[in-house]
Structures are given as structure tokens and as C-alpha cells.
Image (cartoon, rainbow over the protein chains, first blue to last red):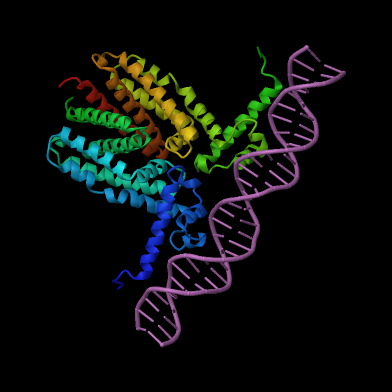
Length: 207
Length: 207
DNA sequence: CCGGTCGGAGAACAGTTGTTTACTGAATGG
DNA sequence: CCATTCAGTAAACAACTGTTCTCCGACCGG
């Protein structure tokens, strides 16, 4: 079938990316439901009609942004959790992974935090699907650890969900942090919370 | 000073409430930043100009809605946590309290969940302030329990924050639940999570 | 009873919105 | 080389937006 990218499709992709970038920039200070189609095309240097060559509407663009933000993260948390080292080390590394990703692409994560419970249904569902997928990945990684011996699947999913929700909360808190010192405070608290969860996990099957 | 409400101020309050109610209804399917002033007044049976007699703009109305949603909850969680009974009982009761409140006023909680990270700054800040206040209340309640002996203030706040964030997440999950059976599943998972946290708490000072 | 207060109505303002229609011109692939 | 595909343009559409100004008339305190 089609092999080389072709000048045409390359240009199309460039325009599409310009739309996504323009939208993401504008979304830093507002939410998707209040973002206008014309506003986006204006900031992308394109006419409003060109928008429809790439997306059905703003909701579709939102879903594409979800993919762009979260798609690259798959497997990473699982990999970190699967690494060797004691639990303390592992949780330190996962918190750091989040912090680094949030610092690297703040706009993407702000978008996710904002639209996770936002007013645009399809986008909410797309985010929920990604979060579910992460939970499954974390559950699979956690299941292989020796500390998880004797755990049934519902409990494993509960624990994984706790981890994932915690990561999302941490990302959100990092974005709301005012300065570097507040960011460090957020990271410190996040680590303490994870430690407490890990402690509870160690004694889950005691009683 | 002024004693009787007066026919005038009573009518004013009724209109104000009509605006708040209309807004809350419309906010079920969209977010505040996409909510139009005219849309609200139309649904409230009032002319657009009348809006300005009550609020500076939509942001101010949003802040008022935050107060309406969260103002009545102060002291309640603290009271539940201060009640007698073992920790298992107490956390069961607090999860139930949340579930009951969410079921009683779903629209309010949906609004809070949606705007907590939404696009309207003043509303975000109002919610953050309320959440901070709750955290302080919970920390104060938790501090009086015998299980908290030897805990310093940062750790207490960390634990209280964990509880509060968990409550918000639970409320959110309940709203997203499809049916009654899914709601029960959410409540069950929430209880298990709380139990794990309580376990970690019990062994916090072990090492 | 009466003059002032003030919640609400009505009309008009200039902008902006999403979407449709018809069209242009360059890359495409046989 | 030539007919076709198709990303992007241009213009027009009716509908809506927030805000300002002027005015009305019912409640108010004295």
C-alpha cells in the first residue's frame, strides 16, 4: 500500500499538529468546553474550515490530546515497579518518574487533570479508559512482587487503583505548586503517603 | 439593626436562589467556563440584566455555589470521626456519610468534582480553601485518637489529607457509577482502601 | 402619605460563535 | 502527461454572547 509519507500527508500532519499545539496552549488557562473552534484555528494560522479536515469537532480534538498526553506513558510505571530494589527505592523512583514527566510536559498533564471530570463526555471517557489501562498494568506489576503472595485479584486491583489515583493526585498537586520549594514539599508528602500505603500492604493479611 | 427580612430582600433572595438553581441544573452536563450568563438567566426566568444585581459575573456565582455545596458539611466529618467505636466502625460510618451526602445532592458534588481542577481560577481557589479547611478539621479529630500518640503535625496533616482526598475521590467515583450495584462496589472498594490506610497508620511508628 | 431606594425589564451594542457551500491549486499515481 | 484527489481558502449564514444604558414600579423608612 502507501509506503513513503508523501509531501501531502506530511503537510497534513503538520497542520494537525499545529491545531493540537494551539489548542493545548489555549487550554492552559481555560477548559475544553469553553474552547472555541475558531480560537484554535486562529492560533494555528489556519482557516476555521480547515479544522474539519482533521477533526469532527472539539471533542474529537480533545480525545486526540488525551492520546498524545497519556499514550507515551504506557509501560513506564510497570517497568519502574518491576525493577529490582526494595520497596522504599521503588516508590521513590515512581514518584520521581511522575515528577519528571509532569515537569517535562506540564500543559498535557494540566489538560488531563482538568478534563478528567470535565464537561466533555467523550474526553472524560477516553481519560477513564487510559486510567483503567494503567491500573491493570500496575496490578500486573504488583502481582509479581513477593509482597503480594496470597492476594486475590480484587484486592490487587484495589491496591493498584490506590497507586494510580495517588499518582494522578500527585501530578495535580505538582501543577498547583507555587514554587520549587512547594514542589519539593509535595514530593515529600507524596512519598510519605506511599510509605504509609506500603506499610498497610505489608500487614494486609495479618489479621 | 435590620430585624425582619422584608418583602424586598426576600424576593431578592428568591431570585438569587433561582439563579443558583438554574446554574446548577445546567452544570450537570457542562462546566462552568462554558456556561453562559444568558443561559442561566433564561432558565431562571429572569432578564440578563438582573443577573448583575446578584453577581459580578459567572465566576462569582461559581464561588457562591461552592459555599452552597460544601458549607453545610463542616464539622460533620470531624463529628463522625470523634464518635466512639473502634476504627473499623468509624471508617464505615464516614464512607456512609459521604455516600449519603452525594446521593442527597448529586449535582452539587458533581459541580465540585468538575470545577476542582476546572478553568475558572476563583472557583478553584474557593474549593481548595474548603478542602484545606476540611483537612485541618480531620487532622484535629484524628489527633485526639489514641492511635495518634507520638505523631507529629506534618504526619498528621499527611494522614488527614489522605483521608480527605480519598473522600473526594469516593464522591467522584459514586457520581460516575452506572447503577446501584456499581455504587455498592465503589463503597466496598472505598472501605477496603480506608482499611489499608488504617493498617499502615497502626504500624507507622514501628520501624 | 411621600420621596428615595433598588430589583428587575427592555432595547440596543458590537463581537463572536459553529457550520455550510462552492471553489482553488498543488501533490498524486497510473 | 493528465485526470483525479483533497488540504486549505473564502464568503456568507443565522444565532448567540456579555455588557451598558435608560426606564419602570413596587417596597421602604420616616
